[in-house]
Image (cartoon, rainbow, N blue to C red; front, side, top):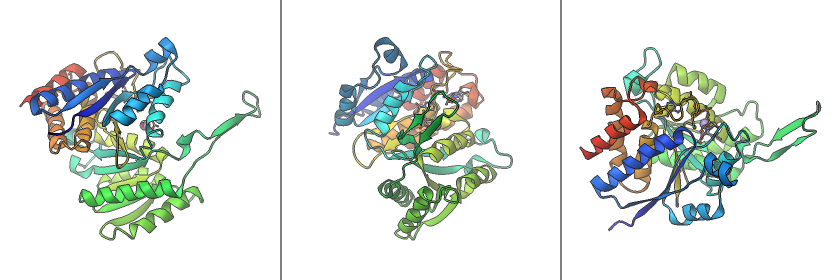
Length: 353
Ligand code: NAD
Ligand code: IPM
Ligand code: MN
């Protein structure tokens, strides 16, 4: 019998709570209908907890996630009542950096022609996967202020790029391409301006590319990528890039998928617990109104099912998401009139068959 898979549930803030509530229903339905041995462990972490007792990301919670869980489902973090964003950084980076989840895998796949915003293109033209480096770059928070609050103020954030870090994300992207029958790989950087840090990226990428002669390896500067991905997304298959550019280009990518409500992600390393989250944030502008699109979370759970070894489930969930768009039983951001709950119900009903 398959060992029970323990999944940590962190709804977080804003619409994170609403989409994860539907995600939990989806997981419970999968457990019931398919008999998957899933155990859900709920964590009260986020802005409410921080405002209540000053706690952001306690060691015991982290320990349970690292040593006892197989997967973590996170909604989103960020709340206007916490302008410093300290709880969000502690939790999100505590997981990504603390668990060394160096691969942030973000598929940019448009599932339905109706969602394709580009004139003269169909959904078939947008099907690539971004490998975002997830433990280095400008995100490491090495830096400081000098003369803060004075007219001579200096603020510094260092951009850290290590050979080890660049090499392992490039290798992961190439291995993924080989395993999934993807034929072309792009490294996206700014090596023309960042003559040291991104020279390392470009050099390291093409060195590793030699080990994968079956993959066509190419380079694009990030500014050109932004132009080209809008002009013709079909030229991209797998893209590997640094932490900051990966963040930015996957919001751009989300727009090609039908919006942030459709973009899924996994944060992982080869072994151990992995973190799954929709690409979007806590969306304070629509929070608490039942307007949030839960389909990114459903697709994210699909990625989780693959990671946990429940093969075929990701494809089935993807088809259900496509059917929700096709039937118009979806939220207004993707052209429907349904509420978050109703979309969740549609997904669960389809799982039941
Ligand atoms: P956002 O992704 O929360 O929202 C951007 C826009 O997209 C908003 O108009 C929002 O209504 C819309 N949107 C996002 N997700 C949607 C969904 N599922 N359904 C329908 N519409 C959706 O980005 P933001 O407004 O820049 O950030 C809000 C907060 O979220 C900030 O505190 C930010 O730091 C945080 N954030 C957290 C994460 C995360 O936890 N992984 C990711 C991104 C942003
Ligand atoms: C994301 C988010 C985060 C990031 C923020 C909330 C720090 O935008 O997951 O895409 O920049 O990584
Ligand atoms: Mn982002």
